[in-house]
Amino acid sequence: MRNLELSPSDGNGYSTKRDGSLPQDADFNNVLSLGYELETSILARFPRSQYWKLCYLNKRFLALARSGEIYKIRRELGFKEPSVLMLASGESHWFGMEWPFKSSKKLPPIQSDYCFEFGGKESFCAGSQLLVSGKEIDGAVIWRFDSTRHEWLKGPSMINSRCLFASASNGALAFVAGGLDAKTYSLQVLDAAEKYNSESKCWEPLPRMNRKRKFCSGCFMDNKFYVLGGQDEHGKDLLCGEFFDGKSWTLIPDMWKDIPLFVSQSPPLLAVVNNELYTLDASSNELEVYVKGSNSWKTLGVVPVRADAQGGWGVAFKSLGDELLVIGAPSVSNNRRALSMYTCCPDPDDEKLRWRQIGCGSIQLNHFIRNCAVMGT
Image (cartoon, rainbow, N blue to C red; front, top):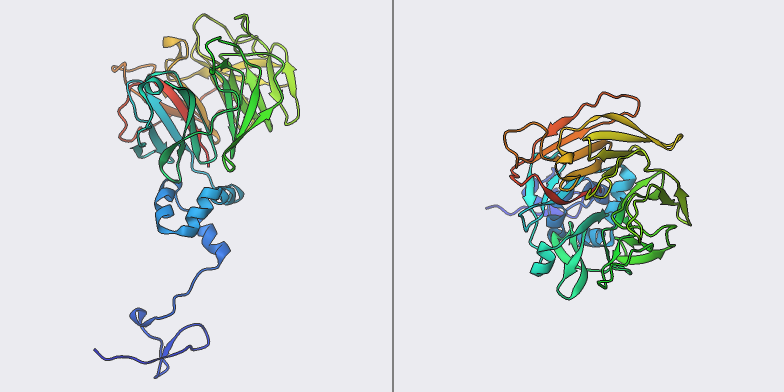
């Protein structure tokens, strides 16, 4: 094979042959590199489901992912790929479905004990992390699934370990409030609240709520953390709600007065789309929207799943970008154990709901959803 001598450069960054022509690809001995900002912008546009692979291939991407910088860039670009993470009854593995929900995957097993696996759990997301709170033999614990590393890690624990609490996500942050004290068996109802930062992996205490609450639910709306419903330390149903604006808590009397309450019902099923608050009434399977100006609720129509079958338990009702997501047993089906997923773009001024059934990929799970969270980065 004839060896070609290359001159240093043609002035444009390319090596040239002695005859002045450009070499073929095999003849290049200088590789052009992209600018830092352009390269980072390109990496940010990769499907988030592939990030864990990129971490093995590119050290700089690994640093961007671990620091959370890549997710900041995605937020600045307005680039979102929501993922639905859920744990169904009878399963020990979590399953994940990523936009556009044409496929599903089984997450790695959590290396915990049987007490955590079969006990009650709460779940919520912050940034690229799924946090699952529960109890092991040695006490309260949080397991954290890092989607960039595709693995489960233990901790960090909350300042006040709790169960049956309210939670809400906002970008890289997650908020929790109320619940029962999980450190002891005194069943003490809490008014304590705290905030988790997925970038620093630290919990920060927040001011205490106006009411102690258990079996409550949370949401993030109008840049405020809302906590609704639940019961106080005397077991009395609470009709008031309250919100945290970053400085203090404000009580909203009778915010829950229009929603029927019954024995053994689940905590309120809440979701926020375009800064509008929705709830799924588990007694009637109807979708309600909160009318902020009159502190009341308006009925929009029936959802296509059976939330009333077990008082709201086992149904997932979440916000998915500008859509509502509901997962559970379908209203009409020959298979009572069938898992169905529906989305809808709700309009508070339009009482006609247009639900769209989405495929479950290869998932064949029990319709009773024990835990569900949406990762929106």
